[in-house]
Amino acid sequence: MMKTNLMKLVFYTFLTLILFTSCRSEEVDLVGPSAQPALKANTTLADLMQRTSLNDGSKDNIIDRANCFSLQLPVTVIVNGLEIIVDSEEDFDTIEDIFDEFDDDDDSIQINFPYSIILSDFTVVVINNQGEHNGFMNGCNGENQSDDDIECIDFRYPIVVSIFDTVTEQTDRITLNNDKAMHDFIDDLDEDDVVNITFPIVVILSDGTEISVTSLDELETVIENAKDDCDEDDDYDYNDDDCMGCTQQQVLEILTTCSDWTVDKLELNDISDLEDNYVGFTFNFSNDGTLNVQDGANNYSGTWSSSGMGQHMNIVINISSLTDFNGNWNLHEIQKSTSESKVDLRRGNDDRLRFESTCN
Image (cartoon, rainbow, N blue to C red; front, side):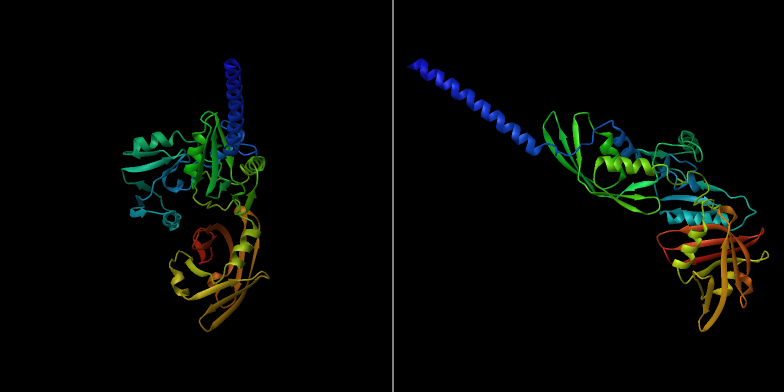
């Protein structure tokens, strides 16, 4: 009888273990990774995502002439003898304006030491002298040479990810709020991590187009298609002054979409500051080639047209009552920022006309 009871006890114990194991497997399934495909370390997609999140060092090339790191702002620079505190990207435009003030001078810029640089992986390094700066600068690729960072597409944050560790069987939920967080997250992935991204996420192309992505396969395809689809501006000619990529459609859109253009700069026949004569004048360009100018109660009518491409694009202006603006101008540059837009025109060696609008 005792032997029978003992056998029953062993049987029930064994049955309990089987049931316990079965319940635990179901619990792991509940807290584990979802059924959707998972992002894994050392895959093509993980590499593309990390390269997309690298720090772009080319935006401040007008100062440091280096594509693989950026300056940690603020910094103090001496531009053609003028001291400027650079605490935002808009100050890069100020430096360019100083460089562009005269076409026949030698431009110079010097950064006051010490300052810090941010490497492509977001490591911050203090620079104490020119030798240290040159050491890091020489480690960068040259102008418009291929490099690792993908600049033609960006993530819109926040992005939520869930990480399941197959060893510890624990799941963590993380919110990524910027490129540094994304870079570090991919960099820290282990082979045992199974990552699920909460879709949809939004990516932004270089032309501002936003794409909603709903799967890992789609994300890999979108990044692959976009990674070489723009001019990464990895040269030292800040903001593409030569307007090599400018098109007539681009000129048409900016001149007609933005309104109430003012004269930001006008130089004719070696006479500068002529823009002071046109304070309060507003210029409005229309799609049909007409141009209307207002100065308080006065109205002036004229025409405008564009031809050519890139560096050889011309804009012809004709306003019978405002002859300072008339003639064939070469498109030198289009500047766009979050607060203003500028269209810079040149003629011959000295004449310059720049329109400005608070359109962004």
